Amino acid sequence: MEERLCGGTFFTLLAAVKRPNSRRPLSFMGVKGSLNEPAMLGALIAVLNPDYSQQNWELPRHIVSKFKNCDCRAGVYLPFSDSSFSTAFHERVRHRYKEVLESMTAFCTTFLQTEDQEKMAWLGRALLELLLSDSTIQPEQILYISETGQPVFFRDIRDTEEVCLPALLTGCWDYIVLHVQDNAVGRKTIQNWLADKDYANSIGALKPEIGHRLQKTIAVSMRTATSTCTVSSKNIDAPVQGIMHPPYSDSAPVEALSPASSAFPLPEQQAAPQQFFSGINIIASPGGHVGQISVYQMTGDEGTSVYEMMGLDTSLYNLFVLDGDNLASRSFSISRQCALSGYIQPEIRERFLSLLPMDQMALINIPSIFATVNRRERRTDPEHQALLGRITSIRLQSHDVHFQWKPYCMFPQQVLNQNESLFDIWTAPATNELSDEHWTIKQIPLLKRLQSVGIDPFRLTR
Image (cartoon, rainbow, N blue to C red; front, side, top):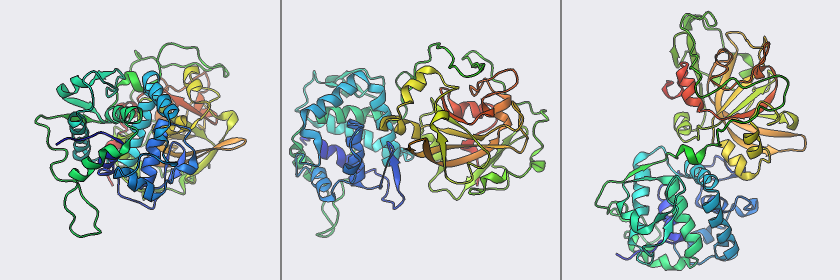
């Protein structure tokens, strides 16, 4: 069956694995929206153009329906026919592939059911079927479907045995906006895809064979290559702030907590969590522990924390050190003077300091540690807790940066003090950066480092 890759056919396949509609507002690239198809298409356009204006996110539903069914080309609401728009996106794919891939990865984890491996595998196979069925794509056509950002000839796609889903989506989206401005070419494909309706006004479902016609097994993953999704780790000078210096190096040994350490009481003697977490419900018994470390899991949150953590980019993490009562609710503010001003590598600071929508999107999709100021310089009390979670929104204000956040689990903050090098905590002889209120970004695999000292957020129980 002859099929055509275009905006409508591409979006139809994505919509088939979209998360169910929800009244709960979501945030993507710093802009709030709804979990519906108009917001999903608006987010795809924002992947093309990070400056896509906020008022265009809630696209008219009838325009989205026409686009999905290949009944319209573009129109005033959709910028795909603007050659300057499509060319600018293609240049970003060619020269700033890492940023585009990060955006598409965030799009996937926000709008698609990435925790369902079968559905993600189906989407990858269905997109490859569509590509290989489009006879208008020339064998020498270059597609950017490799997670490394290297171009791939169309003729070589038939030999593909493994794909990274965000990279595949990026390559398809790039080809569509650059070469298929006429969305109507996919109308017959959509008609052939849809099964007979049960009744006149029902929504047509895709035929069961869609996504199952390839004669070989294709491995589909959400992973992204380290070389394309991390900031350069070359040696750079320490930031100018006091006499702090970074102790961490890749060759430094892992300094896990000793089971004989007296820093923590035994689990049955564990002190109650700090009261400044008054706005958060905490399970009273440990969800998991190694040696004498107790890890408490949050309860009452929407969604599944483990699935959310699996979808985060773990090559970086946010570190927030706040005054004692700033974590009593799900929002807080950091003075601009304390935001990315110290305890940070210059290269990372330069990348994120402007806090453009693209930067905000990246920061929302990395894990975060929320700590409060140490009680005794480089030490704190055994009951002093830090939190692992993520930012859910960022809003720039005149004198500060306002955050909303979501916690996953809590653990003793002394773990960070006793493993300063492991978590890239900047130190001086008598103090460390947990003694000052600030926000910074670290370039380490946070979840792996936490697991190495006995804090495993993936193994918590309710």
